[in-house]
Amino acid sequence: MRVMRWGMVALLAVSVAGLSGCSSRTRTTTFSTSDHDCMARAMYFESNRSSRDGMVAVGSVVMNRVASDDFPDTVCGVVGQRGQFAPGVMSKDMSERRSRSRVSEAAAAVLAGERHPHVANARFFHALYYRAGYNNMHYVASAGGNAFYEKRDPARVTQPTPLPAVEGLTRG
Image (tube, rainbow, N blue to C red; front, side, top):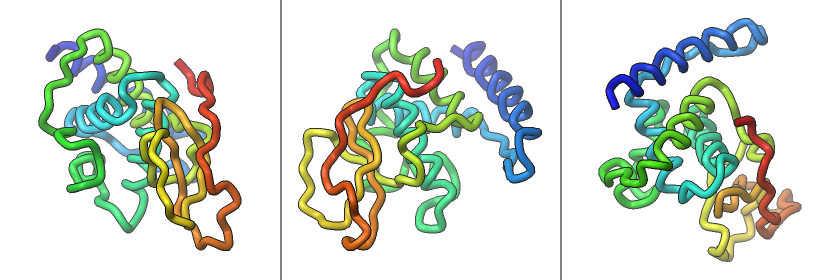
């Protein structure tokens, strides 16, 4: 486990360093093993380990929140924020051994810059089966059993219901 964790840190460092020359606007950020663990936990418990797209979409929301002034500015701060993610996300055991390597890879990819192509600026999601009655929810994607949305002025909402799930959009 410890070897895998250090391997992930090395992979993450190389990935982030490789992205630094992509654009003058690219912000190079170093993420810790704690950040990786928190991201993996959010993906593991929130996407139900159903698909890579679902995990990357959850990770994209986490990173959108980190970049927002409305949320904590660290991955662990966002994932651990009270009432925002699944109960026990920071304390429950990730017991499905087969899922952990897939989750770890997806977490490293998101921390290295990969994003779900349809999530865009969304900072919120809920289970796909849930029907919220709010008029300010503009849906942008569905993946991994979740519906992803932006909060907008009701007059600017053009997609008031969850979109059909689309899978196979992320690398990996």
